[in-house]
Picture 1 (cartoon, rainbow, N blue to C red):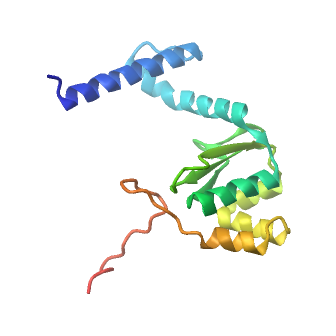
Picture 2 (spheres, helix red, strand yellow):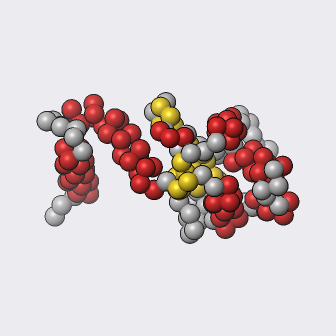
Amino acid sequence: MVTVEERAKQATEKRIERIMEEMEKAGYPVESEEALWKLFPEFLRWRIEEAGEREAQEWNVEAVKEYLYDCRVIDHGNPAFQTEYAQQEFAKDKVLIKCIGGKQLVVDHQWFRNMPPKLKKIIEKGTWEDFARWMYTQKQLTAEEFTQMRQSPFLMRPGIEYPIEKKKRKGEGKK
C-alpha cells in the first residue's frame, strides 16, 4: 500500500515534470530542478502577462462597475486591484481585478487593458472602496449601488487565511 507521503511526493514530481515541459515549450530551457527554481519567477511572470493579453477586455467603467458589484454584493468577496507583478507593471496599462474570498459563484478575476492613468493612480493608492467612491462622485454608480457594495458582508471561506484578516491584539478577547 502506498503511504500518503509517497503519494504526495509522486504528485509533486509529476507537477514539476509538467512545469518543466511547459517551460521548455515556452522557450525557457530547464536542465535540472535547480535550474527550474531559478527560472520559475520569470516564467510565472510571462504566464501571467500571457493570460492578461489573452483575457483582457478594453477598459470600460460599466464592466468594472458590474465586476465590483458582482464580487461584493452577489459573491460577498473583496475586490483587489493588481497593476503589477514582482514589482514590474503589467504592459499596456493592464489591471487585474480579483475577487478574494466570497462564494466564488459569479466571479473569479478579470483583466482590463488601457486603463486611464488618472484611474490607475486611484487604484494604486487605495482600495476597491476608494474606486467605488470615485465612481459614485462621477455619477457612474448610484447611491443605492454604492451603499449595497459597502454594506455587503465579506464572506470568508473556512480554512483559508486572508491577508485582510485583522489579527487579534494582545489581550483582546480576554475577560
